[in-house]
Structures are given as structure tokens and as C-alpha cells.
Amino acid sequence: MRDKRNKKNTEEKAIEINAEMQGTLSFGDPVNLRINGMFEGTLQTRGTLTIGEEASVEARITGESIIVAGKVKGDVSAQTMLVLMPTAELTGNITTPKLNIVEGAIFQGKCHMLNESLTLEEASKYLELDIPSVIEMANAGNIPATRSGDEWKFERAKIDRWIVLEKAKG
Image 1 (cartoon, one colour):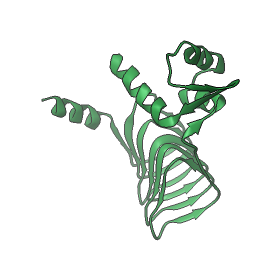
Image 2: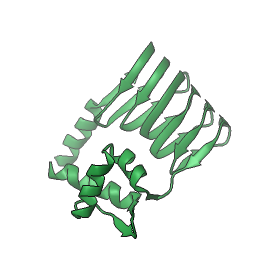
Image 3: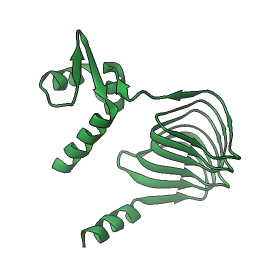
Image 4: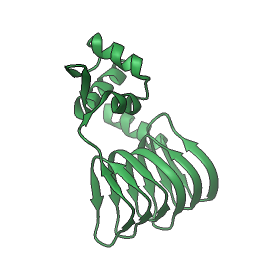
């Protein structure tokens, strides 16, 4: 029964855009967003963003998992993974820890692969918290971190597990 509820919640948070739009789309909660039309502006997503084969997007895109099958012009930053399908045409710089470029995809730009270890500044940005808050949490042992001299280091995998556990607590 629990699986049916989870499936229903995921289905309810699926959004498909088949129109021409401009502006800023920002999602705080995870959604499965699929763009099949034209979009121009800024996209900030959580969950999975899919740019369909017929889509044409000119935007600065940030998200967790991003799948591109259409045309994208702009910088793309994926926290978890970026996939360029065979029909993808991406012109812009990409930042991601995992990248899958399927044969046939076209990519023009620079790629920056994220480290699995984060600095204090990177952890602050990743967690969307100010630096003093991250330091306070690390000093109190409320967040997984290690200290080497005066520098804090954060392992991305441990941070991701911590986030999931914190969300589960409610």
C-alpha cells in the first residue's frame, strides 16, 4: 500500500509544458518536469527535468537530474546527473558530477565535473545555507564534516544521505 501512495505522490508532482513560455520557473519541492515546447529564461528545478526532443530552450538551468533530448542554449548545472540523449543539441557550459553523452548528441561548450569532496563555500552553496550556519552545524556535529587544520571538508555522498535523513525526520 505504501508503494501505491509513493507512486501517486510522484505522479501528482509531474508537470508537462507543451507551450511557449518566458520567465523564471523555480521549484522548491521535487517534481518531474518535462518541457516539450519553447522556453526562454531561467529554470531552477528539483527532481528530474526532461527537455523533450521537440523542445527548444534558451535558459540558465539548474537542477538535480537533467535529461536533454532537444535543443538547449545556455549553461546547465546538474547536482546529480546530466544525460544528453542522441537527439540533444546543447550549446553552453555544463557542471555536473556525472555526465552521460549518448552517441549522436551534440555538445558545444566547457564541462566542469564536480568533486565528490566539497569545500566550505561549495557546501554552503550546495545546501543553500550561509557559511556561518554551515560552520555552526559542523562544529556542533549536526552535519557530516571533517576538519583538516582550519579547513572543513564535506563528502557529497554523506551530505546527500544526511539530507535524506533530515527530510525523513520531518
